[in-house]
Length: 413
Figure 1: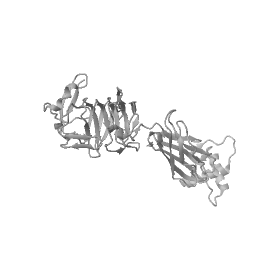
Figure 2 (figure 1 turned 30 degrees about the vertical axis):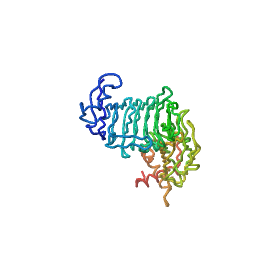
Figure 3 (figure 1 turned 90 degrees about the horizontal axis):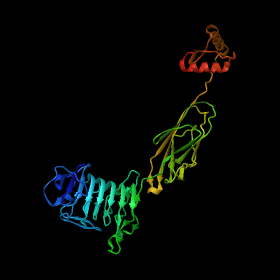
Figure 4 (figure 1 turned 120 degrees about the vertical axis):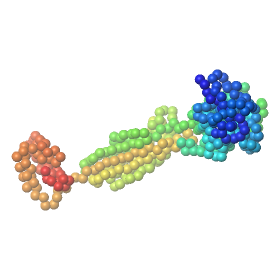
């Protein structure tokens, strides 16, 4: 399978300027050895900058006019390092101790599918790095202590997303992640991630090789807690992060019974705990929450004891409220979990009230006459319905039903 391979020429500085790259099509296996020397010639100058489907290579030899002090950053005399942010499917670094920095002004992103560093230093300076896979050979360093920071999707401050991170080991050495006080997201980690003091990275000898993580920063894994609700005593529906309890239409004065709504952790065994709070809005005199809105630490498969609801059916009308569960996964760097929203709705139908001055005897006579003439009871909404099989009629109930029909339609029958 052929690939478009772009090699950095090092003439400064914009990643997205084709003049800073050579390019060629590569069809063979291996570590792109033929392209590791392309920066030394002006042949094969690229006609476009590398993009999301391309491989980029940083070759042997120094980048012109660039000096580096790990503790003081980069001295870019003529802007020899890449700048401006960019994309690639794969980034390879030849096994050469010459450092390379991906630079920016604080907002740029370098989005790389796979990063492979061979015996070299790759630094991110005032920019953010996004990768699906990051592989560091022994004696290689990825330096993030001077990178820019932003919030990830969980609200955590990070300088990089390293995806699946591998820190190779060999001969007592290992891949090094120089974090300082910066943080990075990871999906998985292979290799030694022992945390060392930041200063130790700069004070080492051959008899005390470097490996692991240097600094006080953190590697953040995706949160594994799954927020939700535990509901008893009422039917509910769920679609993603939205939940609903619809109690339907309830007769005024009916005994509905109480139901409970608790915050829950729906994750399987072995996942993280979650904690947070419930926010209740829209309460009225008929529909109110009783209990605690505080969500303590909840383990996977567990739920808290939070809120009880007992609809007051003496109050007619539409009643609804919203409950929002705000939660975090503390074990994943206080990662903010997706808010869960529950809507509760009920309609209490008012009992019909007879109008003052109604002649119930005359009304009953009219109903009976209609039955004698047609053989059917005229029940609102059910004209032609069969009469009760018992032959007995609750005239008060029938009159009340007819009165309700009149109030709604302006007609008795």
